[in-house]
Length: 392
Image (tube, rainbow, N blue to C red; front, side, top):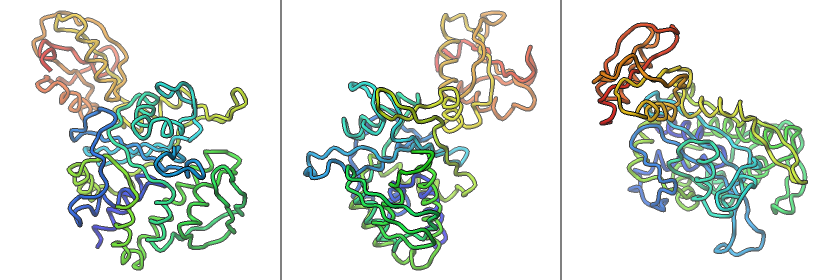
């Protein structure tokens, strides 16, 4: 039972609205891995056991009155979950729904519109282009499914700090919550996570959703909730949509056992609300955004400064290596020629306190030679690209 609880805690860190998708990660072996798959990878990015980035979409109510077949849902909640199986860490980046981005084939719009224009495939492509990182899979759930799963849990106990009351006619929602400690059923939980009247705008809403996530984790420690697992699994199967393959779900389930709560971090895209052409948008702070993206998706690699020198004699090879390292999060500060072009084997020269990162770099090249030492900058790791890099 302790193993199941640990699965659930990690799953809840995956997302606030679409957290329930993770129950399948942990419990799919109970029913043979059937029931949730669409089978396609919309991003084209292959997952081969390295870092896994999953776009989580909590969908709104769609167009009120439209039939299900022709309804166009927007993503009311959007976050990217980045799983590092090597470091045993999970980072979650929340993206405000009003973030102004370029949607491929559409133009500049709020990011939540990508789902309505082209489903999860276009949402994945939009987020991938916007953040500049690969997106391997998606998980989506609408509010109808969210309500069913919270009810299957028996509700979530949470302390509401202030009165929440207004009618959202466009969203078909009547929010009416009193302050105080209480158990929210599915309907009231939806009201809580969709409430938008915060001084900070959408950032306040995201913080409230993270608070709901924490409350949901605590609810799972209650024996009454554990006894409801069969109903929860059934609700998840009926409502969650994902393209994660069964084999990768099993890997994630096994990984979840090894990750502690201290290794799960939540982030919010930095920026501010602003009107453009009479429309309210969330505009990211570009410099801060790049820093957050590096930390979320590349971890500690982002703090490693690297110089790449061409010692192979092959034109452009050092630039190709530099691009690959930057994609892994390393900060390339210089690309130039080495003192000669007769290096057969790539050589990594590293400061004494950077051996751990040098070993990570060595894995990129396979047969690289490591050498402790310092160059012009004692904090800089230098890679002299050899002829062997042409074969990698």
